[in-house]
Length: 504
Ligand SMILES: Nc1ncnc2c1ncn2[C@@H]1O[C@H](COP(=O)(O)OP(=O)(O)OP(=O)(O)O)[C@@H](O)[C@H]1O
Ligand SMILES: [Mg+2]
Image 1 (cartoon, rainbow, N blue to C red):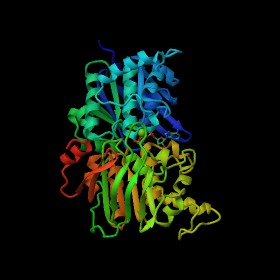
Image 2 (tube, rainbow, N blue to C red):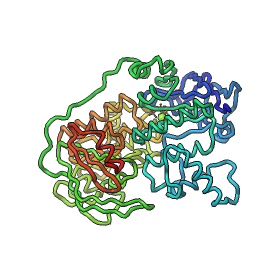
Image 3 (spheres, rainbow, N blue to C red):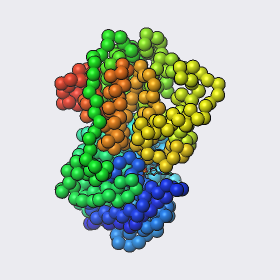
Image 4 (cartoon, rainbow, N blue to C red):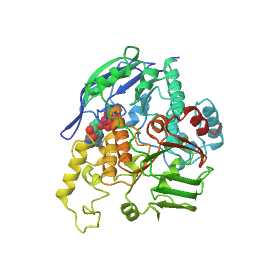
């Protein structure tokens, strides 16, 4: 039976104050297909689908669902029509379990839930899914990759007939991403759902999407069948010019000093998961150590310990020869910078302006890093202006809350702030999550440049390609432990993969 919906947007315009995020954009998604929506960071992709899903009200234009014009004024209207979305930012309730989140998300959830029956139904549903998430786990304890999977499972559980995936695979392993996308493509091609996918991974688009529509700076910029388009053609449509990505070579060898030294580090595990158990991890100046691992194997905990958000049960962290407990003052004194994953949640104050967020780390310091007693407004403005230009941040203005920027632009802001000035130790987690092709190249180049300038870099990433491209040395984490180590040059992706899965 065909249940997949045809979805069409006609002449959509969306303004935020004086800023036009979408100008007269049309999009036609044929039923039972996978349609990719492409464009640079800030092009308007999320805004377009948020209008369709009733989160924003378009100023002009209309939506046709199966050929019929529908008013979608609020998310409940979209629900009723069978339109669903997996967000770039997470929407699950952290204090509830996976099972509770799924059941409670249903519109028809009864006042008194028969958990025994629901649980049995859920287990049956889960058995058919290409990836598993523990139904009893509390969502707040899941790593980003596992939460992303749960978001997707929720939509499939709600039996959507049109599903938008806004960067669904950023935190999945290549294997999980392939599995997930082939599942949704199969569901589409069998006629049960229509899928619109927003992604910056053009290889995925080529492999799993049937058609593409491209936006450029809030305008329609072209469309085509993926069979007729190579990734380079898509990039050219997105940026309006052939691409010459910035890439920087790693220069100079690692120094002998142990800039970061972690020994006998242990943490309590959460929710049935093993805690960290790291005997020794060292990172040297002019060295990028890549930590590879499947999401949920302790990377999040390690980043939290090093970022001061989690207190270890035991162990020692030494930075530049001194004991380190990750306080703000220590980080400042030792030039330690942390680029957390999900920067909007973990590295920003969403309601504060772009300018204030860019100045967050240094607003109370003078040029030498000493504490100052007043804030210099014009210096803050200058700094913000300089960083916005240097990192190509696209924002309606410096004064809008940072929370309204597109995902990629938030990432650029946090990076600009953290890489400003001297960096001795840089800790980055999934730094390219959600960035467009051009921005990925830029960010990676900046990380390498920090390394070349003498920083010790700990790169925690679930993107194995990224680890292979950037690392001087690669270690694999599994179950909270370091289970494998190899030089970056000539590293064998196959054996890294096997250790990531704990099956070597
Ligand atoms: N609520 C809002 N208020 C003001 N401006 C907004 C708001 N939401 C989005 N914008 C602006 O609209 C533009 C388009 O943003 P959008 O999130 O749609 O981009 P995107 O194509 O999804 O980018 P990315 O690939 O980085 O996710 C951006 O410049 C953004 O700052
Ligand atoms: Mg977006």
